[in-house]
Structure formats: structure tokens, C-alpha cells
Image (cartoon, rainbow, N blue to C red):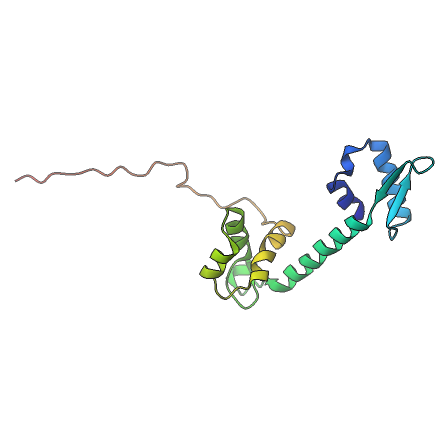
Length: 152
């Protein structure tokens, strides 16, 4: 996971041979703060910051798993915030569409700021299964309203 975090932080810009050397060095010394690659240590890769980032992300994921539960008896197993019937993916979708945390808290006072911020973490880690629900109305034009005059 540490190497994948390094890749996400820009290591993928290096040639494949160098990336493989870095991966081997990280595998041999995963707790090191820095790895030296190439003869003479010409290339040094700091992995301490990537480790901190990865550990922070994992902590947030654990918090999200504690905050959001999926019970077959509650909304047919839809992941909801513990103690509520508020779907976590709905909150994550609202945030993705540009709603602010304050707006969501105004509409859902049972949630906390931290719970709202954990919704996208959970949604990204555990995406919905299957196809998205069909929306048969999405590509249709609305029915045309007509005015009928009454004969006088």
C-alpha cells in the first residue's frame, strides 16, 4: 500500500525500471523514512510523508466503517449512518454535486460534521454494486400541455 501511495503522489513519472527498484527498496525496508536507489544513491525517495498520508487515510476509513453500518433489517441493507436511516451514499452524492457541509447539516440535523465528511470516504472505498438504477424519465420530453377551449 505504501508503494501505491508513492505512485499516487507522482512516482509514476519515473521510468518503469526505476519504479521497480523503488518498489524493491520499499519492500526490503518498509519502515525507513527514505530509500536510496541507483548506484551511489543518486535517487532518493522520501517515504515518510507517503506513509503518514496512507496511515491518515486508513484511520479515516476505519472511522467511516464505525460510523456507517449496513443491516439487512434497515432499508434492505443500504449503508446508513449509525442510529439513523440516512443513506451514506446520498450524502456523498450531495457533496459531489457541490452541496456544502453546512447545507447538509441543515437538512439532516441528526448528522455531525465528521459524519458528513466521512461519507465520501466510505462511498469511494465501498462503491455500490450493480448497475445504477434505471431512470426511464431521464431522456423523455415532458408531456405537452394543451389547452382545450370550452364551447360556449
